[in-house]
Every structure is written in C-alpha cells, then in structure tokens.
Length: 223
Length: 255
Ligand SMILES: Nc1ncnc2c1ncn2[C@@H]1O[C@H](COP(=O)(O)OP(=O)(O)OP(=O)(O)O)[C@@H](O)[C@H]1O
Ligand SMILES: [Mg+2]
Image (tube, rainbow over all chains, first blue to last red; front, side, top):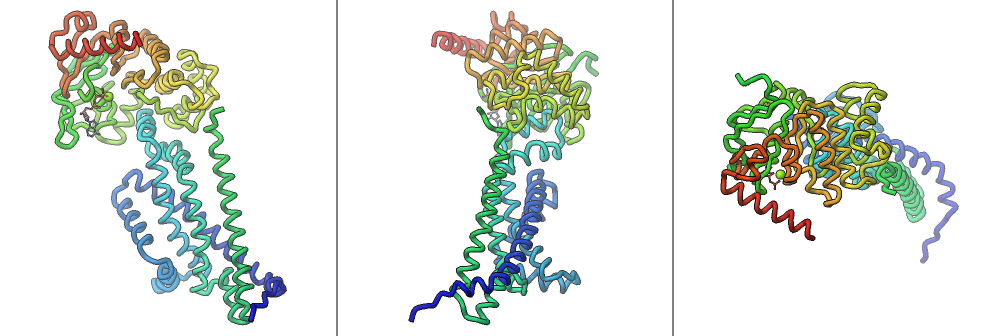
C-alpha cells in the first residue's frame, strides 16, 4: 500500500500551523534576544574576572551545558512555581530557552573577547580607559563581530529547541502539528509542513545575520 | 625625598614572573624633559621596565613614582597614572574599527570628557604634527605601518601626557618607514616632552637621548650620556652589545 499524500490536508491545517509558527517565532525571538544580553553580560563578568560573580557565571554555564535541556525546561516550569514564582507557560518557555541559550552565548562572546588582541586592551589601558570603556568601545564592537557565527549557531539551536516546549504544553509549531497527528494521523503531511516552516525561518534568521555581518564588516574595508 | 624635578623615580624595583626575576633592584631617575634611551639584549627586561612605569606590569618590590604619583596596583591610581603617561607599542595597537580621527578623539571625549569639537581640533593639530592630516577619515588598515605608528603617537599625545613611553616603536616597520617615525619622535623630543624609549636605533639614541640606559639580565648595567656610551662603554657586555647592533645595522644597510 502506498501512502496517499494529501496536499489539501496541509492547506486545511495551515491556519493552525501558522498560529503555532507565530508562537514559535515569538518565543524564539524573545529568547534569542535575552540570551544575547545574558551572553554579553556574562562574558564581560568573566572577562574582567569580577570576584564571586565570575565563579557564579562559570558554574551556571557549566551546569546548563552539562545537563539536558528537557529537564531544564521542567525545572523552570515546575520548579520555579514551587518556589512561588508564577510564570505562564509562555514565559516559562522563554526563561528556560534564554537561560539555555545564554549559557552558550556566554562562551561564544567570551571566545570573541579573547580573540581581541591583548595589545588593544593594553593600548586602551594606556589611554586610561576604564574597564567599562574598554568593554563598550573595543571588546564589544570587535568581539561580537568575531563571535557572530557561533552566536548564529546558538540562535538557530534556540529556535529548534523551542520545539521542546511542547513538553510543558506551549502551543508552538511542533505542538500544533503533533496535536493534528494525534487527531488525523496525517503524519507525513504534518512533518513535511513543519519541516518546511522550520527550514524557512532558520533561513531567514541566517540571512539576517549575514546582513548584519556585512554591515559590521564595513569599517574594515581596505579599499 | 628626591629633588622636585624628577618626573620618574624608580627605587629598588624588582619584578618576578613566577620564579623568574625579570627586573633586579632597578634604580632610575628621569628628570622633567629628559630623554632616555633604554637598550640591551633580548630578554634583558627593557619592555618589562617601561611597562612597570605605567602599571601594565605589576611589580613586587621597590617604589615607582611617575609625575608625582606612586604607581600602585590599584585601578583608580593606575587610571590617574595613565592619564599622565602615554605609551607607544611596537605593534601600534590602533583600534581597527575606528577611523584615524576617532582613534584620536575617543579618549578625549570618553575619558577627558571634552566636546567632540575640541577633541577634533586637537586631533587635527597632532595629525598635522605627525604630517598625516589627510588620512583622518581612513581606517588604520588602510595606512602603511609608518603612518599607523605616527597615528599611534598622535593618539597618545592627544591625551596630553607628561611622559611618553616607547617600546621598540620602529621594530615592526620596514626600513624606509623607520625614518619617518624616528623623525616624529625627534620632533617630539624637541618640544620638551619627557621620553623613555626602548629602541635599538642607535642613530636616534645618539641624536636625541640625554642618557643611555643599558640593561642586561634584568639589571641596569650602565647609564651614560650617548657620547660616552658609544665611544667608551665601561662594561664588556655593553661593548659586545654595541658591536652586535652596529654589525646588524651595517648588514641592513648593505642588504
Ligand atoms: N608575561 C611574562 N611571563 C613570564 N615571563 C615573562 C613575561 N614577560 C616577559 N617575561 C620574561 O622576562 C624577561 C624580560 O622580558 P622583556 O620582554 O622585558 O625583555 P626585553 O628586554 O624587552 O626583550 P626584547 O628585546 O626581546 O623585547 C624575558 O626573559 C622574558 O621571557
Ligand atoms: Mg621588549
């Protein structure tokens, strides 16, 4: 028996899928933005070796990177409400993904900071720059450029990992698709549809970062 | 205490990198307006010494005073010291993402809190002095090494320091560019700046230095006016060193 692939089914379910896609995009974009901020702040704390905070950041990064994401999501969803912090499903998802992506971005940005030559830091120091001046005027503009490709990887991972949020009942794209599969068993149609949709947004995200890289490289043009 | 004219005073300075003693019991006085050239074989501690003067390197014992401030491992104090001390590096270390002009104004506006207008005016004044005002809107990577080093000198001068430190400012340059940078430094010397230069450019040393400080193995072995140092070095190590440097220069000239 051959599978009877029905395009019509995809068309019919598209409004529901697009609702899911919208949630996926919302949760991902917010999480990516927060994870970038966490990355920059965390990497700056590591860069200047701020006592205590630096160790806390190191521990946090280590913890996130050496435990699976799914229990992290459960921990935020159930654990935080147990601690009296009431978050909606959506914001629990945002928090979990942000913490996860933030840990990776700390390492990404830190790599960028370390790639900025020691000489520039000494030059900045010799001009009586304070650490905050060095960070803002030298380390960030140069380091973030260097770490953009790895930050893009992390952003794409955050986007893909938003699918795990179905585990806490967030009606994102994968959740919607699985829901339809359970109702109608049109497995191939659903996976083809969400496959294309995920590919599409990852592509858009990548193009956006390429553009950004292009803009940021402009000052270095030598011609 | 010491006489009032000392711009830099180093007393009993020692510095270790782990177990390795890079500087051993250094004493050095530099008067206001004086020009010092530090030379010596590789690894003798020249860079370490000048880097101690503005606190880029920490020291373990001894006392360093620059422009009336004791150099201590304290962030605020180091900022105060560095406001008075400019430094020029072998590799220029210009900020690559900023134009030449912004390299010269960024410290003035952010650290000295000057207006953009005043900062640019002073920047152009110094760009004229180092003879590259036409490069103001280019990026460092678009300039030759010699031009970049002159921008680096101008960048330091824009902070209006009382002392300028140079750590082998011409060793990364092609021979034809060495001259233009030494020219800039010679003019700066003429303006009365207090200068401490690590360099192997003996022609410059002869012409500009008030005193040559010769270092070996972390110690100051000899300190003398250039005429005396070049004609009759007292120590054998200085004599050997001079012979090598001069041979090297002759070889370079013949090449
Ligand atoms: N960060 C460091 N850690 C360990 N040892 C160091 C460090 N910096 C310098 N040294 C050592 O200290 C000694 C003096 O170094 P320094 O760079 O001051 O020499 P120098 O006279 O400037 O030599 P050169 O002419 O090669 O620049 C060298 O033996 C060097 O290996
Ligand atoms: Mg050196």
